[in-house]
Length: 102
View (cartoon, rainbow, N blue to C red):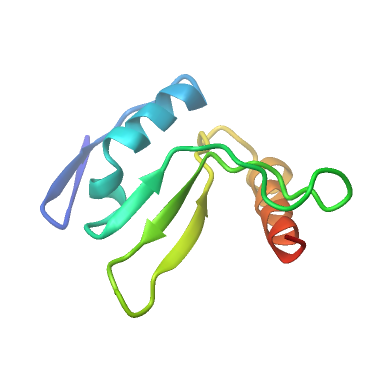
């Protein structure tokens, strides 16, 4: 099974671990995020340690596709088996809280 999008072909892969998935995201970052983007594979704390700790995303995406409006995104690579609310939404909320307290 595969998906064609914007001239790119994406093959279905059922990753066993997030580490395997992260390697694939790094290798295919331009195809996934588009031309004019830079995927930064670094795990850095958002916010301060302690009360307002926002957590540590898997990476960051710098979108330079519009030179007049560059954007920075947090990237969290998650397996489909992870609970959307208990695991993923909680992490995204911590990123947002940490960002507000930098």
